[in-house]
Image (cartoon, rainbow, N blue to C red; front, side):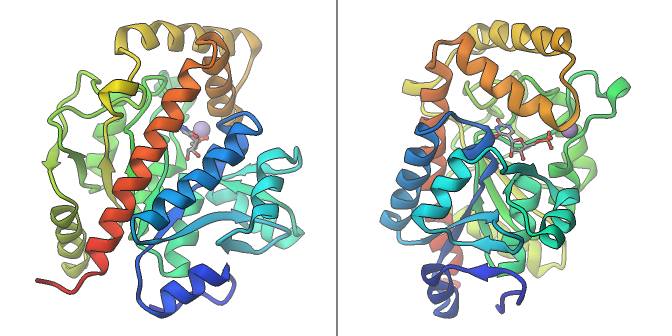
Amino acid sequence: MTSHPKVMLGDEVRDALAAGKPVVALESTIISHGMPYPRNVEMALEVEGIVRDGGAAPAPIAVLDGPPRAGLDAAALDLLASDPTVTKASIRDLPYLVATGRHGATTVAATMRIAALAGIRVFVTGGLGGVHRGAERSMDISADLTEMSLTDVAIVSAGVKSLLDIGLTLEVLETLGIPVVTYRADEFPSFYSRSSGFASPMRLDTAADIAAMMHAKWDLGLRGAVSIANPVPASDEIPAERIGKVIDQAIADAEAAGVRGKDITPYLLGHIVELTDGESLETNIALVRNNARLGAEIAVAYAAPAG
Ligand code: PSU
Ligand code: MN
């Protein structure tokens, strides 16, 4: 597959794509607006290593000085992790950032699109955006969902946080025709916890089966993502009841502080870290590691000749 000429590829990513080797795209909002410095950059480098150990080339994605990029060097990662001029970049922000030569840390939606433009089919993140609680009044529904209906990428996440309305998010994913598969579990996970109270629409137990489902979807000409939910390891989870109370508190504090729109998710993530004295950060890092391992395995299986 050829890469779009406007996407700047790092050397490792370019070589892997040219050779038809597995590549895994990595999101950057989680670095810039999901975790504090310097844990964020340490996590980003560690995740790249996990992907390499799994036999794939890591492709962290962001907008830097204008062009969308797939593959970032250590200096670029450090800038993303620490520079306050790096804004959160979803799909609607891309034209502005590219035209004005700015920096953006890409959300799931923007990362997916840039990955697809580069010719990358597998993408690893922490949590998906979705339908916010109270969306019937706020209309706050992440562009992650609409983008998943448009762009042919498999996304490995730890599910959807209960700061969103998980039930409504699953409904919208169904409406948009996006298969939601949980890896080795029957229940859809809620990021910090293995449980959510919602059954997973589908379950698969091997990377090979997931790769086969990606081929099946796109071979039929069905456009859009395959969403793979990978529950946080039991040893790292925060029980749903305990984190639920923290999330309720964080949402109440956000309302009291008047936080709205694109600032809501980063505010809540940062506040949950504070309210849990950093415990949620450790869980977040553990689930990203776990997702990177599975993402590499899926990319390797997807790149393998059909057996
Ligand atoms: N949920 C998480 N962690 C995150 C995000 C969501 O558990 O880091 C980030 C992702 O980048 C996601 C974005 O794509 O927030 C969604 O933001 P919004 O709701 O503004 O579209
Ligand atoms: Mn929003």
